[in-house]
Image (spheres, rainbow, N blue to C red):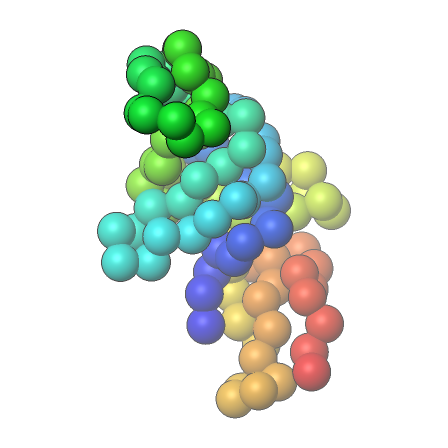
Amino acid sequence: MQRIKKGDTVEVISGDEKGKRGEVHEVLRKADRVIVSGVNLVKKHQRRTGNVRTQVGIIEREAPMHLSNVMLYCPNCQKGVRVGFQGEGHDKARVCRKCGHVFEERR
């Protein structure tokens, strides 16, 4: 089971963006990276490519960051926390290691 999933709120724990929070847009499992909204913004210089409708000019977008640089944000603790698991098999759920808050309901 994954510790961080698409749609989770995470907090950045290291790097230039330390302390910022955002929602996970995408998890890139093979590269161990996540794309978080509003965090790790980079500027991409995009030029016209034929007659295809694309945004042209300098585009600001989110770049992937390593999974180890983010922690799941717990609304009870009001900070990034480590993730534990409760249950087995299909009943497994992610929980906060500090306060025991369940992040999603079990099936």
